[in-house]
Length: 90
Image (cartoon, rainbow, N blue to C red; front, top):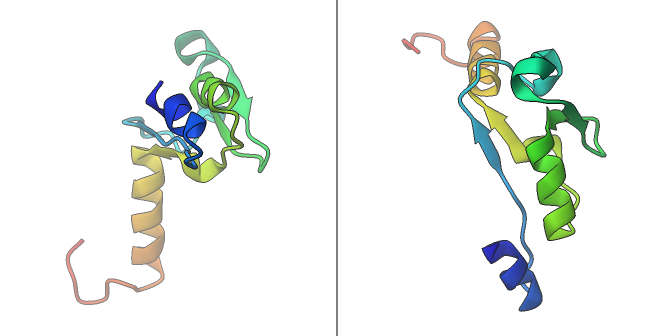
């Protein structure tokens, strides 16, 4: 991994996983279809990929390290409901 090489050169690295799923987090996904849920230190529920990234890169990731289409839609809809887009078509 290029991240491990950067860490060896004393750079700070992190990981970001972007999923196309409409699920907000992996906690509601079928483990038979997607694998087990990995719970991060801050309580974020992700798939095992982020757990592997943490171990491989020796970093502690947060729920913000996992982005899904569902999280984006949820954020936009919440902002629309409180009136942040008044007068605009979203």
